[in-house]
Amino acid sequence: MKKFMDKDFLLESEVAKVLYHNYASKVPVFDYHCHLVPSEIANDYEFKNIAEMWLYHDHYKWRAMRSFGIDEKYITGDASDYEKFYEFAKMMPYLIGNPLYHWSHLELKRFFNIEETLSEKTAKIIWDKCNAVIEENVLSAKKLIKMANVEYIGTTDDPIDSLEYHKQISLDKEFNCLVKPSFRPEKAMKILNEGFKEYISKLSEVCDMKITSYNDLKAALEKRLDYFCEIGCTITDHSLERIKFFEVTEEEVNFIFCKGLNGESLTEEEGIKYSTSLLIDLGKMYSKRQMVMQLHIGALRNNNSRMFEKVGADAGFDSIDDGEIAYSLSRILNELDKNEELPKTILYCLNPKDNEVIGTMIGNFQDGKTRGKIQFGSGWWFNDQKDGMERQMMALSQLGLISQFVGMVTDSRSFLSYTRHEYFRRILCNYIGNLVETGQYPYDEEILGEIIESICYKNSKNYFLSK
Image 1 (cartoon, rainbow, N blue to C red):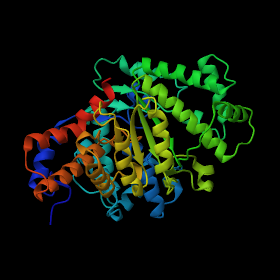
Image 2: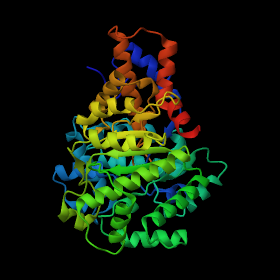
Image 3: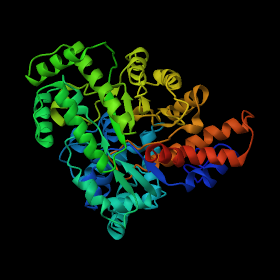
Image 4: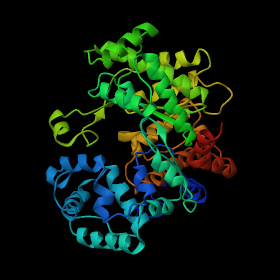
């Protein structure tokens, strides 16, 4: 029986151990997609305790706590921080097979040097140890980033954001991590969502221009995109729930936009026509600026209307959708590629049934000029666990080139979640190591080491920072 989470955790072969310890563990973290709050980095926020670090914004933990029968008071309610931590600790031994068990203990080991496993029995001891480390070492936002050897952070930002905190971060010459915005025009695209009209009004104010037509909207978004690029933005992001493609004229899109702007009711088909047309127009803008477009596909959001009314969005009530994606995704990419206006693109799927769809789709639009121009993104959200990552790696390596893969992201709101890169790297090295151990690939440490370092760091750095 192996010891729990020793230095060779998840590494099942000698080759895997060599690849992880000699290569994967040595390179910095390039975290190109996350949901950290830029103001907390800029102001070097100092955390009060481990509960604030761990439980304030983590919907993974909230979902598990609800499933364990823990009252909402101890999740998003008004219980004390220690009470919330204690309830989470009580649940911890029962998380067998859940990635939260691994993530949480990796975070305790790497940031707090704690070897004990968390439980009801050890809750007070670990609470005191963590808080002592936080106080003695002043574990602020920037310090946690430095401890995790993070070289690049891509936040997720709305077009109307001033980006003042990104500017502030860039002025700190002692902070050796690039923190750059990512352009996410979600609210401008979701014309069927409540508040669309009000959002366009805000965008109009920020751009100091009237937005009364679809062309005005495009001009306003392009103006904000140029502003983002001035601050160093090279990445964009889109959340696509269900993908449907309709042929649509510019006149029709303008008509739909004007209806939405006037607060008139729209059909679902009209909403899809609008959002698809805008995505394609934005993709052309991204290509012109040599930016990367990320498409996150397949989330079914805000399923529990009662809890949405109570605690709002992003609180642990989203799940995997099962809609068809292949045909419409192909048509969207093809529209952009017709005149060679398809930017570098990363496709993420939330439903693992779509792994092979994405694995084959990326090969349709590679251009023979840019290595890995179209990427199959890492196991996302409900797939960023061992089985999900392995299935993504298998589909990508069998149907494409895993050697050109841009690797892992935290996709997180937590400053402790950089251990997910370690988790990914161990799983990657084990997957590659097993191919060698079983005679499916020769043991050539030089090329294997190069592939591992590239997937963990070099590919993403080249992909996002080189023109």
